[in-house]
Structure formats: structure tokens, C-alpha cells
Image 1 (cartoon, rainbow, N blue to C red):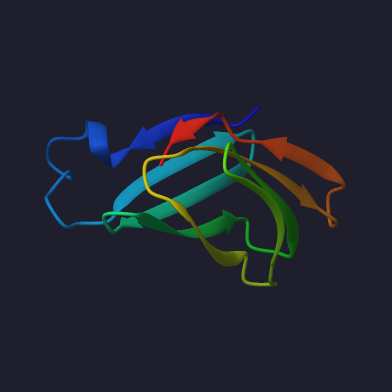
Image 2: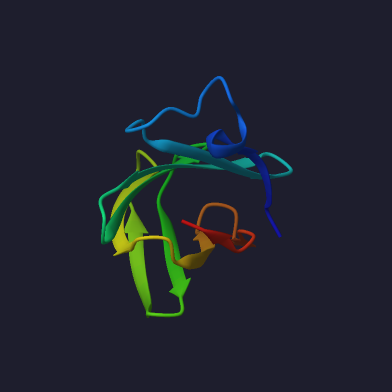
Length: 106
């Protein structure tokens, strides 16, 4: 399980109206950074994997479950309804590992 180690919503210096929310999940040497830009009804989530590399990503949310593929740069974007719970399961072919993020309200 990758723990939530940073959330800009909880950081008074980072949290500003209109600014994208930033979250970081980490486990061992793998980091998953999210940037969440919200509109009244939708959230756009940009994912950056560190170290970068291709990965299969399963997105789990009460309203939808779907698969994505991050490219060699470790980036991918998707949309969900605003303020929904979500978790991701990330599989990296280079390491053969699977990593699940903690559930968070985006």
C-alpha cells in the first residue's frame, strides 16, 4: 500500500483558492504524484510516476473503474466526478510490482 505522504489541501501555505490540489503517495522507492484540478462537477487528475516508466493503472471509484496506461514518461491524465473517493493500482512491467494507493476523496 502506498501511503498518502503529502496533501496540499492540508498545507496552509500551499492551499489557495483556484490552485490545483497536489497529493503524493509513496512506498519504498516509488512515488505517485497527483495534480487535481476541480470544476463544480468534475476533477481532472494528472498522474506522474517516479521513477518514470510505462505502467498499467487501474482506477477505482464508486462511479467508475477503468484501466489506463502511463507512457515511458510515467504520465497519464483522467477525469472523475468531483469530490469522489478513488484509489489506483499501479503495475510496472519493469519491476513486476503492483502498488495500490490509499483511498482518498478527490
